[in-house]
Image: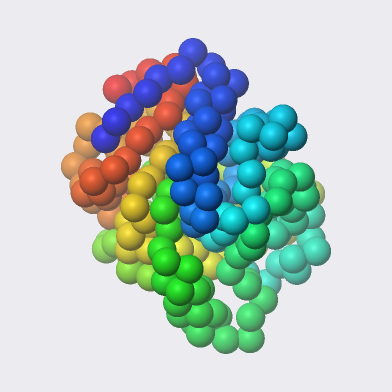
Length: 239
């Protein structure tokens, strides 16, 4: 792992956006894997700024998001479809943007369709990740084994607690999601993980210094050949 530590979340976001823009500049038709949650928001704001300043053009690039809640309408403001539109897609010019359909009639078939769509696009060139407090990546929660392809996951209580701030009440947080599996994530050519804040420090320590175990899904990144971690001082405080 290549580890970069920044003094604060703002400088981290600037660095992350610069790396994403460099990927597009070097390969305009890149396929990007994108994440949701609070970690990438500042990075997306920086990408929008770069686009508005004409420093980067996304018109040949395609995106695939990591995950989406199950049974939450895409019009719901807490859906990841809505999140991505508000935080990024409404402001830049990607050629195509893809998210899994959490309202599909056959969710298992939708999982297979999503992986096939990634393969048809040529695979993901650069996958952007965050990390959960329990070490999850995407919505791949601690488990007894690493997952393979895109799958339906049951969200753990810690993830529900972390996400309830986005919903009017805890009972409205969905209990399931469609998520790229560990195998899908690991098939990306490059991976970039962002972590900010002391509340992520324990998970980061386990990822960097602990054993590779499905009980801390992010630890699998040790087996990827091109991983870059971008941390602020709080997230890096225990490594």
